[in-house]
Image (cartoon, rainbow, N blue to C red; front, side):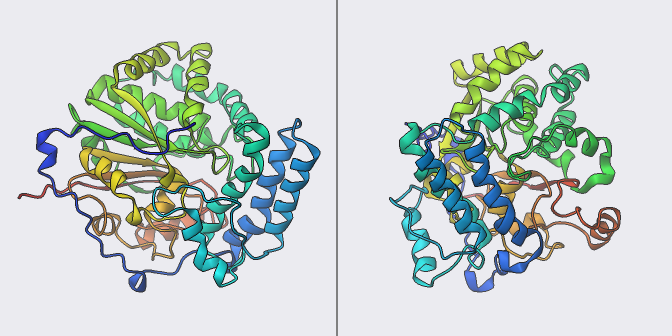
Length: 425
């Protein structure tokens, strides 16, 4: 059974002096409204069309499923598409806090539907509904395993280009950060389960003109400052993005030499392609067979020595924002020199999936709740309607360049940093 709690950290004495108590000033009455399908546009399309397609893709990609299971999944897809009221889960599911039943209770009592409940809630809830159908008859097999495996196969050409560009042995940390960023273009939940094979090259090739905000230099400085300390990397997608992230991790271990890199992952399948503990071994095997054997060997050695570890946590498959993070996760972040969050789902969790004005400064917002002593950075391509830290003139140029896709099509990226602030006493 997958581990559902963060392994306790042995904190160096110096880190114990940090103030780790939350700086909570995120009262609901002061926050923007959440995104919902009733907003229309991309959010409505996601719930009414893309989410049902994701459920049906589970049936299409698992031909050994029984007829009964296939019918149950199709019924779930129909339920979502029709905007039906939400239902209780058949049994409670862990979320690192009070559990999914407690999360759903107010929405169930009010008769909330797939369309008018918060988008962040219904997307995460959908995957719990899928798993409660598939786990028992399949022995807990990943319902998205076939798609994840295909995403690796489809990454061969892009990864070969990375290797030919010297990224497996480079000393350029900035190049590895940029590659990790644009790897986020490859997201199977965005494409409703279809493979994405060329987007990363197209987006990365556009260079700085595709960056809405770029704190890459500051991020590299924050990463270098973790030498002899701990770095937390909260992963996002399997396939091409995980390959790019592993190149970054290998580079960090070689160039920065932190005492430990902790890879935080989902405790259960979610958002089709998100990384779970069972996804790392086949990815390392794939690297062996596709020109990344030296990288895979170094990563396995670091896993064996404890310099690299996987940390699954149920909070990452919850419907809660990061400012509600459980105590054990807050302590893990506070003990790290820097936390790097990959991808759109982690970004949405950072911002609570709320309608923040796009010009809202990123760093001051993070300082409202993030552990004070720890730098936090987001690497993300834009694939939802949540965005902060972008100057109005930059947004205007993006809208002019890509009026239909700039905010949700993964064609623009951002690197945002909130530096850590040491607290004395």
